[in-house]
Amino acid sequence: MAKRNRAGINRGNEDNYSLIPRGKAYKPFIMIQDVPSLGRSSRPRGIKTGRQHDFLSDLERNYFMILEFMDNVVDIREQFPLEAKETLLIAEELGIKHPANPTTKEAITMTSDFCITLGDGNSLRDIIRTTKYKKDLVERRVIEKFTIEKTYWERQGLDWGIVTEEEVDKNYSQNVSDILDYYDLNDNEAFRDISFEERDDIIIAFLQRLIDSPKTVRQISSLFEKDLHLEKGTGIALFKHLIAKKYISIDLFAPLRLDKHLRVELLVKAREIGEIVS
Image (tube, rainbow, N blue to C red; front, side, top):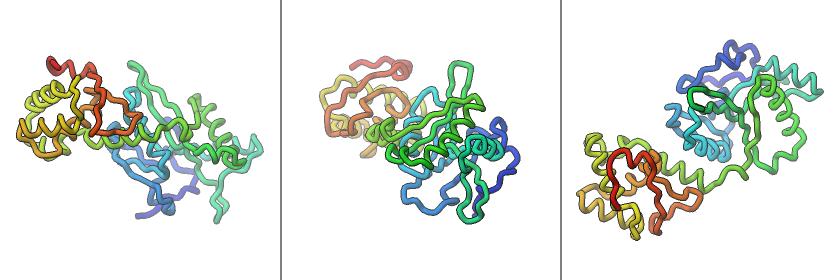
């Protein structure tokens, strides 16, 4: 596959913020195959966007998981390009050297790690977030690049900010990553031949056993599978699905220990599918 030329600054619609595609149609300006292996790159599939996302570090991926689980986030566009002509002008005004290709010395198109679209009622707004490990924020060159980036987005009228590992709880992001693997029950072979109506009955039955039970999730799941003649592992998959779809809530900031008793909170969505009696 041909690699993108990051040095090019006349790139049509990608040089106009308002014309850059959204949702599934968006393509990150930097993709994993465009850069040398960093060892921590990943390509999770997004639930909100329905496409593969490209992340170059654990911090980017972990922050993405937090965004993916937020109700008011409706779109996530990573490795988002800035208009090179504008960043060149800003760099000149500020007396800062513009990022360039180390081999050709050509100016490269700068990117922000995330353009996040937030939904508030009937209105949408974009904010920009760049991730960086705190130890790197003392480097002069990093600060210079961020100054260009911040100025660029201020002129676009968009809120810009830096996210460090201190704002990204590792337990939370790892737990979210785990449970989102169970977002769609169709991905679980045990549920593929079960109708949506029957699934609701199964969910209600599982919730009735789960709420206020002194047993562990693993114990509840095992008994549930035996009583309903379900495949082993179906109960745990259903438990994680219910968290992913926000039928129930647990403390995601703590390690997810299914062999320990967990406090489970029933959310509005669970009550909408039927009466839950503990």
